[in-house]
Image (cartoon, rainbow, N blue to C red):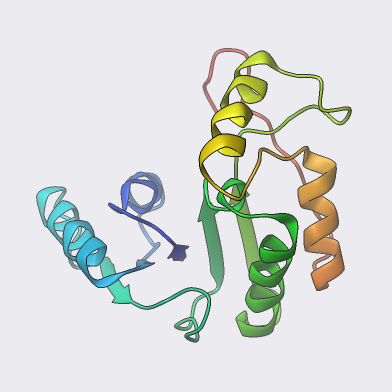
Length: 159
């Protein structure tokens, strides 16, 4: 799994704790990769999590079967999200997958309230915004991905 813009590696740590045969690469800037390495050691996963220092916009992605974007798309306008989706489809092997983890608006963008409230922050401080599932699906479809699924957390938060 390639954790694009993976920060501390928290998503990778969670995934590796759940799937024992999975390995992860956290892709981020050099100082952030140092933090990811520290957390991998702290959680006893340094043999399964590595960090790769790179610029997600201009440098190639390392090999992986899955690309994970955890709370990345909302930081960017649609054209940059489409760029990332295109970059993923071009670098994934046949049958590779992409996972986009975001807080999603409903399809008419009227809620839920927590997504709408967070969207205000995004609009004020970054170039991005919260998206509806249909918008993220369209970005992935435009890049060439097929069989797109949207999975929402259950009401209890358990998955």
